[in-house]
Image (tube, rainbow, N blue to C red):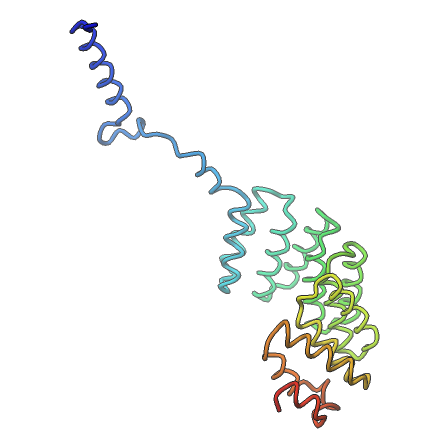
Length: 240
């Protein structure tokens, strides 16, 4: 069947007009299409959180602070962002502000174990051992399945001479996360101080298994192992 010329002409005219409407004229910003939906994610709290984390990873802490601040403005109930903001502040030496951010994270989610761990770690670094111990214990009570607070408490106890308690807490963190060479290393040092050679060497071998030869070098210079430095089995393990 032949289509009348008038119908073809009219259809062609509509197609041309439609194409012209979709293509904005030069300089006509009003005719430009809106941003794609994916672009809306640029302003999300997660975006700024990830940006801040990446800046922290590259030691650009001042810029990271601004990104974490933006993240919590967009979503106040964001304990991860409050906590990482605190970490960035810690690296800038702004300790009181750091603690305030951890406190806000805990206020939002009292079971968020990472905030207790970071808070306790900074207290320990300042040699505020009683406060650090209490903070790690609060973290354990609030988040018993979070391994880092057992680790933090065990490390602190190993450093201040409470080796038996340290071994127990380090064992707990290893039950929750076996792939932790530092926990094995600190446990090994505690066993060495307790004159438990077999347990010390077994834990040291685990540290090396999970973390590599770095822990051989650490054991050669860490004073916790001085009772084993002349031991032939210890020397064999650390490559002396």
